[in-house]
Image 1 (spheres, rainbow over the protein chains, first blue to last red):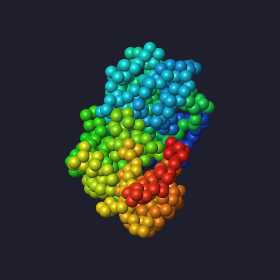
Image 2 (image 1 turned 90 degrees about the vertical axis):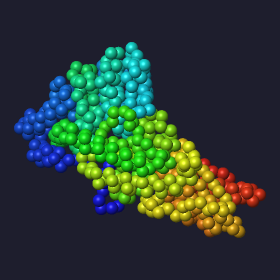
Image 3 (image 1 turned 120 degrees about the vertical axis):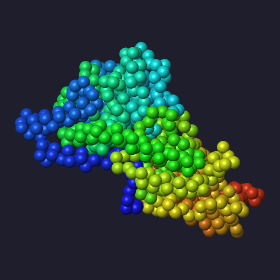
Image 4 (image 1 turned 45 degrees about the vertical axis):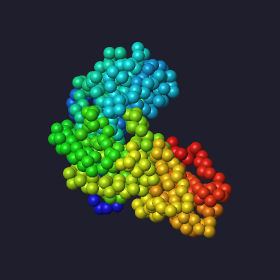
Length: 396
Length: 141
């Protein structure tokens, strides 16, 4: 492993911003009370918690702070949104629509609901990586109770038309949830403008602490608590609140909002520089979702005739961290369900590489990645028994 | 899922990569849909493996197992070469993650196919008994 590392896997997680760490620090050793206690220590913690809640509510334009529930992360927010909304009031049946390229934190609870009385439809995105509102309208039914479509896809970087999808759901009387873990702070997210009933967020994707998340839940919705106990978070999410985490989340989100405009321009330019260089210099490569709205920091690259994990490991040895949707990295023998959902052929999906830029990514990092990646791909293709046959000049 | 240092060594600097142009036997296994393809070429003299080279499209484990089997098989009699098992390959690499065991099977199968190809080309009976069976639970989940 080389000394200098280039971290280009910011869609997996981010480095916590030192400004966020500083904002959290007082809530470990000074203001350490339980936010539910009546004494001074408790009141101080409660004040800090409610301050964080109000700041998050304001950043996402919630109509009131108690629509913001602090959770342990994106997975808990997704799980509790699906199961809590579906089973509210003792409901045991109904139709649920989720897109086929959701994160597993949505797919798995949807599958669980499917085994427990609910009828679940997996809605396919189009090959450009976008779930079309017309396709949603086609599968909505009178008994549809809930629709869940993610805001930004974590592997492709494509942004979904949430306002249109939420309108379509509402017109048929269904609730709309979106997993916005990947887009929060990167693409404008206004719960009122988008018209969503519930949304999931994660702290560690926005340079905040791991183990923190938020579930936005519109006031007045029936909701079955997923975690039961002391009745914290307005009886919707029990468990002593993570006050430093809530403060860290709020600060991380405010930094994202303050820097978003400039960062969008900077990251888009870096991303485009990478894509132009790699597609220009390497034959048989392409980028997914280029004709769809995309997040500024993520490239889903397909390198034909190379297996993704091999590229990842060679880049890692050169000090560069990226990820892949290849089957072999997932512990299963199936290529990524996201690439399958957009009809990417299996043999090509194995060559996927996800590069996700972040707050500290520089132009030099991008150039370094391109210069490292090209010889790696050439070497792996030369080692392949089928590259020439399948993709060579004389082949397909 | 972590690879041993030995897997990473073989992956980073694989041994015996390439194709023997005037090979006596050729084994090609795998399919592009599952993501792993392997081709082994062998040179045989006196029923022993004189030379062996591989080409592999696949993950780190697929490349490392291909590389290590060429080391293990070189100089062996044909009879002994086809007896190399996936467990022995994994052991030689200080272990493989459970979901990656299929890669070691691919390497062993490639070698068996190359030996059989040599024998059949020379009018003899194949001896490998075909691909080693893999239990489903080793395919990972």
